[in-house]
Image (cartoon, rainbow, N blue to C red):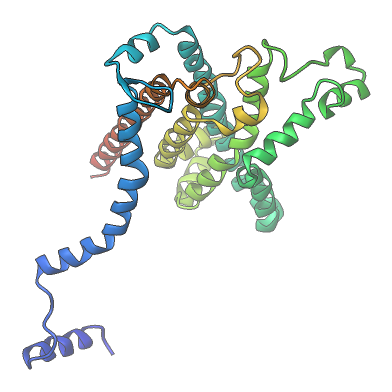
Length: 324
């Protein structure tokens, strides 16, 4: 029985006086009703708090009592605040450790699992390894942070104990307490946390690459690295764009790991804008100034997201133009 039969029956029923199909405008209105709960939630959870935060950023307020309008004074003070700019420099290091390094390493690992492990050891081994790499993404950041605090502890930490055991005791360090090392230690932890996400996305992207492209490259004598560069990279470019944008935004707003591992210390060596805003807002009760920090951070993230999406759309248009 063909699918056209029920359609003909419904149309005939409509002509006989049955339920008539909704006009186009009516269907559009009914679809809009399904979007209403999401729109209301977005308004209450995102738009309203952001509007309140932006309004507070133009005030001098301690969190209680009357609000005092201060205009742009918080923003003028912000742009001359060395701590604010230092926190943004630390954010650039976070982008390196949470976006760039995981993307590169994740791509190589995904290609290796897809090309070598899956072919030689089967899909079960590949699945287990992929799950192991993705495990840090599932762990709550509080749990991961506490575990790494134990590992990196200066006196009885696992890392220093291991260095002593292998005769490298001279390399023992106060990994999270030394201002010269703390930021790099946090970066190492964040690479471990973040690497599973790009790996899983890239392995999904590799599933849709035409195997004939690899076969043609092999016939032309291309090795594994050349196939990765000339075949894999162009074919999974949309996934790379998504991973880079997603991870960069995550790096700019990182908070939980900093809070658990170092609380921005020692001496502000690992302070980032989100944690700087938190301490200014809640601990120093400079609500207006803390709101100004978070407003600037939000605007930067929004602009970065729009630029990234625009670049991705343009790249896809160019790719479709070439294909046409």
